[in-house]
Each structure stands twice: as C-alpha cells, then as structure tokens.
Amino acid sequence: MSKLEANDISVTFGDNKVLENVSFSVERGSFVGLVGANGSGKSSLLRSVLGIIKSPTGNVVIDGQPTSEMTPRQIASKVAYAPQGAEMHWMLPVERLVGIGRTPHLAPWSKPTQADMDVVEHALEVTDMIGLRHRIATTLSGGEKARALLARAIAVGAPYLLADEPVAALDPYHQLQVLDILAEMAQQDHGIVIVLHDLSLAQRYCDRIFLLHDGDVLAKGTPDEVFTDQRLDQAYGVRMARTEHNGTSFLTLIDRSDRTVLPGSS
Image (cartoon, rainbow, N blue to C red; front, side, top):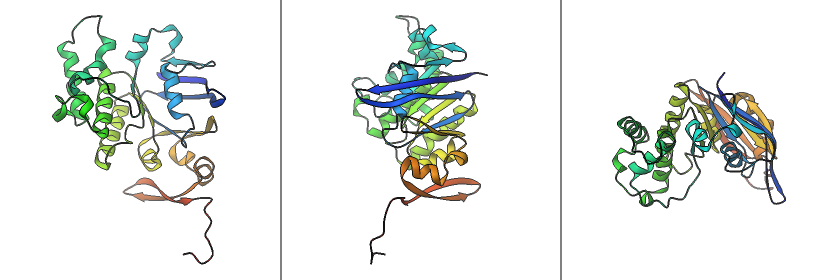
C-alpha cells in the first residue's frame, strides 16, 4: 500500500527533548490530524519528515523508498509542505509565488509549460486567491498569506501534503474552505497530514488522529477513539462536551479540568 512513514523520530533542542522515537504514517486517500498541546512536537515532527530538522534516529519512507536514497528534488516532488506562519520576503506577485510549487517538476533553467500554468491556476482557484493573483505577496494579510502558501503546496501536485496549522490565521469561512479542499484532496487519493489546535475541526475532518504528549504518541486512531475524556484531560488539561449536528460530531470546550470553584462564586 502507498504510504508515507516516519519511524522512530527523535528531536532535541539543547537540553530539551521534544520527541523521542515517535512514529506515524499516512496512507494515500487518508486525512491525518497531528494534535497536542503547545510544545508537544507537532511542527518538529513535520519538519523532521521533510529533513528540515535532522533526527539522529529512525528514518522516513515514501512509497517504500527511504528518503535517504532520494534527492531533495525527488522528495519535494513527493511531499508538499505548507508551513506555519511563514514570513514572506519575496517581492513577487502571488501567481509567481504559487508557481514556485512547480519547481520540483522543472528541469534547471526551463520555463513552466502550459500544463504547469494550468496546475497553478487550479491552486489559485480552489484557495480563493484568483482575485489576488497580481498582488505582491508581502502585502497580503496573515490569512491571505496562509492561503497563498497552501496554494503553492497544492501546485506541487505531490501525492502527500503536510500542512502546519493552515487555518490558524483564517476567518471561519476560510477555515472551512481550506479544510474542505484538503478533505477533497484526500478523497482524490492524496495523503494529507495537518497540524490542528481546533479539536472540533479535527473531529469533523480527520479520519485518523495522532495525539502527541510528552515527546511521544499518547494515542492514535479515529477521533472517537483518541478524544476520550481521560486523554483530553491528560494531554490538554481541559474538559470538552460532545454534540452532534446532522450526523456530524463536534467537540466543544467546557473548562479547564483543574479549575476549582471558589466559595460563594457562581
């Protein structure tokens, strides 16, 4: 079966051990959520998969081939990445920024073909960036930058896409729009991995969840299997309610689980 596997990944910053022998995988056609409290290593795990952070242990395998046997261009054509809150320093129109996503498929010094431009057009369209295609990327708002970076990742046309909090800076409409796009990509046989803090959105969209805590995977499985009261308390220190609307389950934050009520308060 075609899948991306990260095996026994460890990350240490100075004396701080962020991840220790953590493994996860995503199959084509699935939508995987990486969740956990701040500092649990979600972003570091994605960057380790891409080789941005070097893990002294383990390996990454894409469709049966270790990345250690692949060139950076080959890896970039297989795995697209939408980073979290990336600063933009390119004085480029959005259309050209998104077009950078086609770089792994181009020979050195060659120009994009019409097929490449069609892919860029599609990426701009699905991310609702058509109207901003001629804007200079550095002038975009935070939410617009997030959508532009997602469009660039989509333009790669890679079988796997890793997105680090792609909806964090977006208004509610565009949060749902972006997640609908990623869900549709999963249905079209892409493997999607997304870092999320909104557990209700993770519950709604992801078919598999990896919950990180204390440098390890606390739980993995379907959202219903992972998001138990005990694990939410252990990983986040919160209590959440479960509701349902039109057959879709939602999680709603109630309170901190360690909160004490003072005498006389209501």
